[in-house]
Length: 266
Image (cartoon, rainbow, N blue to C red):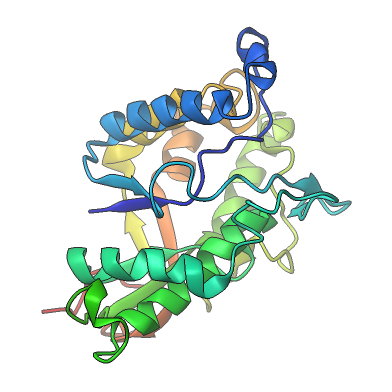
């Protein structure tokens, strides 16, 4: 497995007081700190191959603002060096050699909304989609490696029915505020209906490692409130399932949801 991240999160929100000084320690201080957080998170998950698109500091965090509906949107001012402002082909050309070198059987990326609307997530979706197409063309930039057609592309998503079940369970216990900010309206672009989901992976055995990885991102995730404080039984269901939409390549076999992103691939 290879994880490709696109920025170091240089201008993101700092949510804990003891790290607030990073905002004033220079333009790259927070990014360098978050690189350490990323390494700790990857260690928790057992991931050893994680790289930044084009190398560290190639693209800068674009920042974001919260929209009235609770989703993220583009900030009023964006650095010209930001990932959001990057030329699509330039960014894709940094991903093409990685695809050709790693030769993944499944490429997983954000959906067209970027999960919750963050402009860098949206750009990551667009770059991954374009780069996957370019990487398969034998005559395109042969100096970037031998062509590779990614057999399957998936978009990660959240299940509306899962969120609804979790919210109902929390309401029964008087804890609805724990998922405050998580959308429940089925029309939300952050959620997918059962008919849109192609794969549901039971990863409950890895839920503790997933939570440990999230806790490693101390500068950006409050570990003592919100969804990080879910009751253990609800947390197991909330963190223990991963959902994906099929976005191209070889379809998944059979009817209903597949339980393996590699199902049907040689």
